[in-house]
Length: 145
Image 1 (cartoon, rainbow, N blue to C red):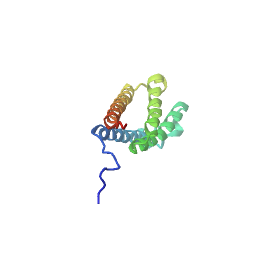
Image 2 (cartoon, rainbow, N blue to C red; image 1 turned 135 degrees about the horizontal axis):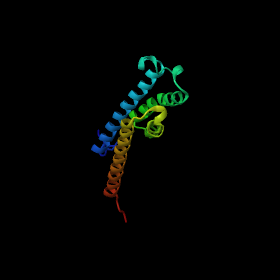
Image 3 (tube, rainbow, N blue to C red; image 1 turned 90 degrees about the vertical axis):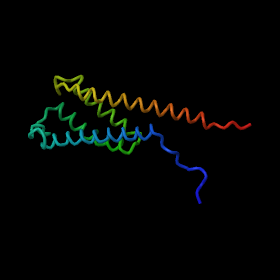
Image 4 (spheres, rainbow, N blue to C red; image 1 turned 180 degrees about the vertical axis):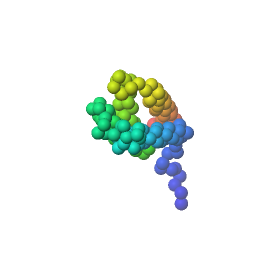
């Protein structure tokens, strides 16, 4: 016997696209994390980026980002509320590195641009989902005497 109304609401197209977007960002965060770990253990950059060979600013930045990006990846993949927060910390770290301290870390305008684009798309999705939820609440209201 089936119930008359499902207990789980159907996901809208915007909701499904938002989840797909979050998972794509999660994969890219995981890739960034792997790159930092490969650099720190000497696997990439012909061993020149090993932790013991880095300057102090690079040690702080690379170890922080090597932890933050995989954690952000997990949170974004699971679509939990703390995932975007950790992503903002990691992306903010890279924006500070390459935007405000290019004399230490070198300039990388592409990373900065990509982080701002991801943030803009995220905000557009959140606005769209908020408007959708608001419209749905108005349609379902029941006025009983």
